[in-house]
Length: 448
Image 1 (cartoon, one colour):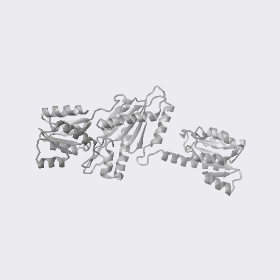
Image 2 (tube, rainbow, N blue to C red):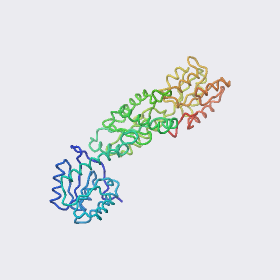
Image 3 (cartoon, rainbow, N blue to C red):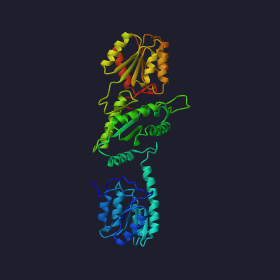
Image 4 (tube, rainbow, N blue to C red):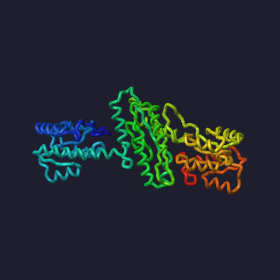
């Protein structure tokens, strides 16, 4: 059941620093006018309510910054209202000053127990009251700002993002587009498991700062949860917001988050972008963006998908490095029949050059190839910061123990000898893509 005190908690902005929206609950008309004049002179917007009933009506609208409350009112005891205020989430932290006659020790104790912030006994020094209001509002502003910041990254949090969406839509023409995006850093679970939670939190903090710079076109960038971030774009269609996200992604690839360390770390993200329709629910738009982010993950990660260009998860891409055309035909046909897309390369050099931007989910490679052999290709993949997670299967006619050991030590996850069954290769591919970890390297499908 909804309480009459429930209502939006978004706070309006005032032209003077430290000014707020105050509700004076006072039945003495002369005293109410005095409070309104003194506090209004200080820049506050003051509303007077002479009864509990009228106060509840005003409070239901939300957006208040401080309440001055008389205890002796024509239709009840102000302590009843104080108790209601503290019991509702939307007003539980709202500053309340008791301004009343006859505040003895017992009444003060009761009001303290109910959550009053300050007490002023009539007759009141109006100048002292105005100073106390100013100090309390300053602290309240600081508390509200902290409550809307993610403690790890310093970016706006979920609540602040939803407020930004509501504020933007309130004054936004219905024919001007608004887009929302969900971004998730790829393989971040692997980062946490490799270097520990504390180190990973530091990386995420720096990544958030970098994102805020790269996505300066966004009206709001917030941390949603874990390695998920959300962005709000006014005056941009999903396609236009997708261009900004893609540009930021490409710039992020140039950042080594372990600069100076022997093992570099490059982060990428997958993102989905959806439109926020006029009159539509922001949570529905975020759910659509999240679905598109999953499609970006499923299609190889490190990419941006908008609702204008994708409605379902595309097939996962396999890179095939093989110089034998008959093997390319046989393996390619079987993998495509299983729903994969295949990109074939006749040598390790061209495969390695194409891999970073291919969106591949797995590499299959021969050992003996011109220009760059399979061992060199495997090492190149494992040394590349953005490719180190890529599962690798070897298809080779070289079955001696030393070669198998060399391939595994270089970073291969599977070694299949020629001649082979194409059906077995397809089964092994599916198994590799389902495995949560391969020799310490995270290969994620369900858990991303």
